[in-house]
Length: 60
Ligand SMILES: [Zn+2]
Image (cartoon, rainbow, N blue to C red):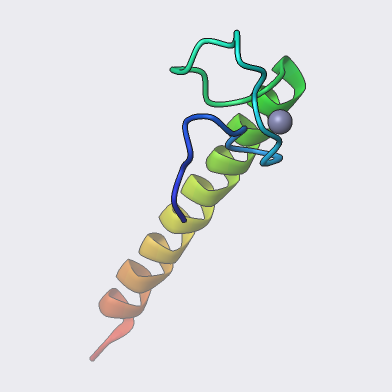
């Protein structure tokens, strides 16, 4: 997914012209939502890694 710096990374709404172009999200709500989503993704990645390691150990 391409991240357009002029659009919110969470909801995709375009920023107003006077908004700092380095901003990722349009609002605090979107910033928090994005953070939570990334946390969930990271947790899922770690769980998959752990499952793969466990499967490796169970091998004869
Ligand atoms: Zn947004």
